[in-house]
Length: 549
Image (tube, rainbow, N blue to C red; front, top):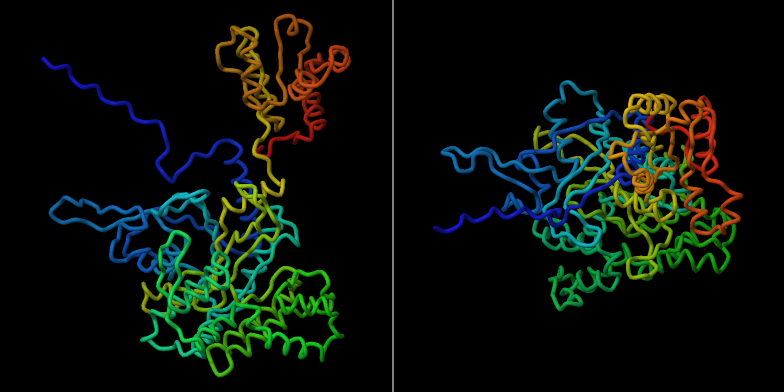
């Protein structure tokens, strides 16, 4: 008789494209989200927590492939094998599509405009890569029902405040603003208006959105016949004529804009003093961060960009409407104290999603980091958004104006760590050791006292037989302090407090004589327990009260 086959043990590994988050990562993210939520709340936005699952029908145009409802998202069909299969459901792909559904479903009960923020995980069934996961956090804020571009200006100001609140100082970020109407105007001037040019427009939009990755020459190739990448794969281009391509190229290529930039410099010099030659070259090259640009000019940089854009959309009503909206945004932000040192007009900002209809914006961190191969590169974008006035219309049949922003939580956390604003570890709890297992009630009373004082603390709950193992446990937890109270200490009314941080430092660097002169264990009266622990924490630059308390 054959032996029954053993059931194989499951592999203990995360699915491809997913990862686990431990201790400090989770608490750091929660702390960052708390700070962002405080800014959103200060601006008058209300929290919304919508379902993590939506119908594929509700996701609609947000799906990467509408012909294959399970492509790009994690989707399944209810009762798929039954006589009457149910709806296709999917884990949410972003936080914007659920907002559109929520607003359409509850619009009679919601204030108009409706201002909400949402934070949480989203899931995308896409090919994972370095730093690219199938589950990640988003942090959104949107205003639904406000047609005025004042709502867009407010989002930009709020985004700047969020970055500074979490620890990105002014000068290390810039919020770049553009308007899809301006780009549509450029396409119209280039002869790409009309339904019969939808394919070409789509290729042009996707090409410009890849400017950072492909560079001007790569985008030029995609505007023409196409582009072959390093692997030999060929991407078909838009097939524009040289004249059409040049009109589009002027929109994002500073060198192609040179003539218009010279005109803009001359125009602004009528209103402010002459520009030094070095600063003039910086403006012509599009390097607005160059410190040679005088302050009086720096305050007019957005005016400089608007002059150029007006020339690019000359003859297009939609394009001129877009420039006028940008003028209003710049004026409103300037009145609130948000100048071109933080928020700038940038024609290269396109945003890849097709549903944007007006102003679009991206938050870019301007400092350099070392990548995994040791190369120096700019950190890049951590947030983006824009106006999407056609979104809710899918549900209601009526156009509902909306604008919003999404912050990439994991990228922003990585930026804070790169700036040294957050460490990869955090201090563990104070560990109360167990010297006599029959006195567990005493130890629990002691740890309760520490917690009530706002200190993070725990009793050792493993096998207390080997005291060395208790200290090893405290080290592994990253504990700053261990508390020791045996029978002798109990009778004398004292406790031993071991400074584990100092102890580790002494063990690593000190001589025997130095070790004797710098003891890391202290005996104090029992009633001074909390005072001494707080003193030790302060000496090491640690908070003497738990942030969660």
